[in-house]
Length: 324
Image (cartoon, rainbow, N blue to C red; front, side, top):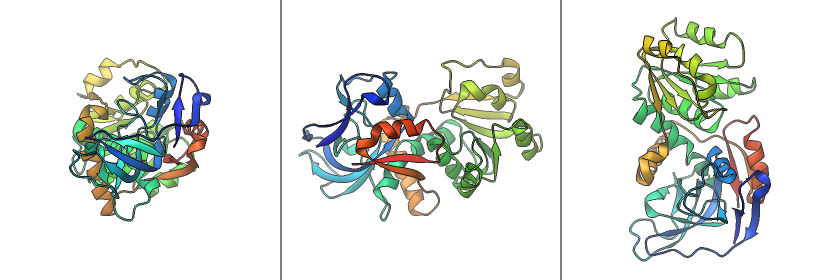
């Protein structure tokens, strides 16, 4: 079978599209024929060696995917051959999803909503559970609260906008590109602000009549934390999904304590495989009810994984997906 592997850590050029043996499942595993695999920022950290995990090189990367169960191990209860599933959490203890076939644990295999394209299902894998984890498990979002989603055009951001709206919140969002304003508004944001404009902070304060927002979903804390603390209401919560351009961020203590702000760090992987699958199942139900939808901006062949990784660092809206 074909797979995208790394034999060394580095830039996109280390991604090797090559032939390897088709995997054989152990008694408690599934073999899934991968129809689509999503490209995540996490995949870049694995490729670069910033998150090496327990598997030795060479290894197949990729966290998320969707496909059809090809074979179930003898001890598997639940998913059977022919079932259409979506999954997340590969590429760490298991080989990744950038392949024609992948080993998936039964607990990770979530039924794909009927009628949903495999490319759309793959795009849900990591970003929707992460956004749901940030909003509900960490920030405790309540109906009627106001949420500010930073970086709303990206994978987690576009998911967070939709989930917050579906959960009954008022949604404010920021983007950097002019063409993304209407696209994010189309996802359900009540107001969209260009974050790169000088009056962005004042505009958000104006939209909340000076009160501030209850929850911030932040994808670049090292860049935006000081501004976020100036935008949260008393008792506001900042859910930190991503660190941003630096490894550390200074916390303005006076600003934080002045509004009883909570700074909530998170990694959705702390939910465990079963927890991630449960959140993906919840989102799948929301998709089936028409409350949220995956956002795919581009589908590329698996052989062009390097191009996909470069594209991920350029302005784009939603998710980039690879099709074997």
